[in-house]
Length: 127
Image (cartoon, rainbow, N blue to C red):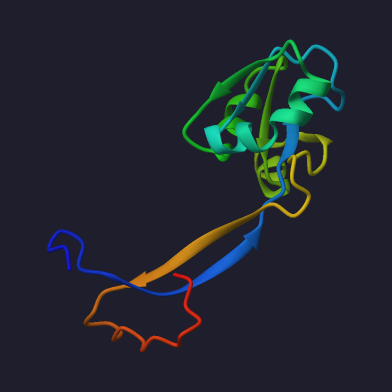
């Protein structure tokens, strides 16, 4: 085990990921920049190419940051969740624009060895 990271994987969870296009106004017209985490930009590439071919795609640290920035400029849009739209007072201009309808992200559940022992192998483990 690595002395710098004394943790182990005890499980995983898979969550649906839906990327929505958010902005100050409720239409696609005049969007110059789309801001999001690089992974979200990649996962919405086909939709963006089809619907916003001239908009700059700008990578930022997170989708929440993209939504926050989109709230500051009417020509900008962010790719983020419905919760981010609510939090930053943005309209959802387009719902679930990810290229894969069943887009999922897997998260590992980790813990310190002193918190919980490593579970025994089940033979069906994928983590």
